[in-house]
Length: 478
Ligand code: ADP
Image 1: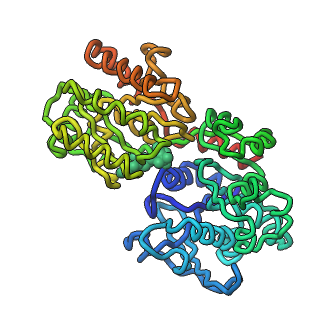
Image 2: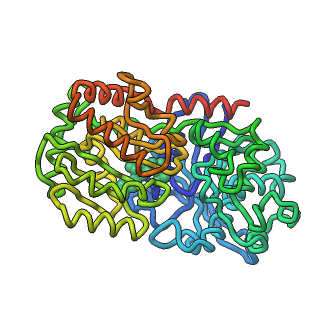
Image 3: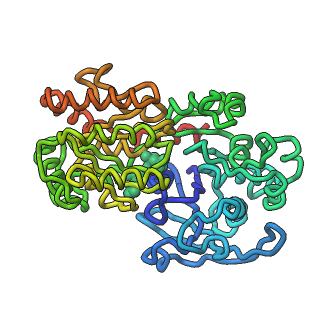
């Protein structure tokens, strides 16, 4: 039986700041345990809720030399829903209220995590055939494996897959600093595989040394080999085309299930969608102080409030979206102050039509997906995007830009007709978003049978992890 270790900075339910956590917390469960022994390694953040921390078992602890001195390396273990999770303990690095602190310190702590993940393996009675690394935080695992750990027979046949969840975040810092922190051989820096331009680059380490590279949708895989989306690494990825794959993410269809969701008072599936969504809409309108009106078109946003997510396109349209009183807008998200403030100001001027919640609230997000008729996600770029998949499952039709995973997972009315699941615009400008919004609005108010048909299509889409897990399985077996 193949043994696979996932290594990552986040996984639900232990710690989450974004979609990475959803992926790492659900993909491992999608493999058949008779075929593959999949386990997960994470940092033992003190920010992990006590309900999990108190059940972790100490396996062992010892000291390792890292960045100039001896460091504590503890290994904890937790069996969660039948899957074994390991946690690398070092309170100096993984203490504090949040997994990320200051950028430079994050470089050091995830370099340590990458090193410690390998150093821990001989002590946990688990010798993986393959380590599946996720994003820049684990980018140094493949180079460590190819250098420091290479001569230890325990590691000799270990292979790696590196998955890019977001190429924008690469773990960049001064080249000498990364060399000193990591202790990796100087040649790796002098000859470039751990650098881009003259900076040290942890993500590039993963790309250069992993046996296979994947990213989270086919379109994004194509896009990031171009200078427009490549974040300076397009040429590197182009060279590696023969071992670079796009595999679309799924969602946890048990967690995101309107038929059983504990966040909803009234459950629904595709056969009871009208009544279910009407109840969710009325409840959310009441909860957030909006006019309680079943006839308005409710638009939802659940997102980081950043340029990546297309908030600069939403801002100029706020006035129009909420002017007529036919539409209401609910925004749940945190991010750049100018967006948070811009949304708040607009909501304050029309509290019956617009509500903004600048916080992170999982249950509220579920109530928004359920209550929304349409879901706005006009991203500038989108590796995969989970929010639109959740929106589809809850029958909120996505209004998205044709980029990355959005392009691969939403079928637009203008192209797919009755088979459509949403509204997709091409060019990244306010006019594009406005066009898609107007098409949605027109359909909602003038052709309700068509809207209902699209909603049924959306809810019937299968974005369970099963398909993606099969693709990853093929790659693990290569
Ligand atoms: P990214 O990882 O780039 O932020 P994704 O669409 O891949 O975007 O995943 C975002 C995930 O985080 C979704 O599950 C979404 O519902 C959730 N999310 C984003 N912002 C919030 C928030 N403020 N409160 C609750 N959930 C949120």
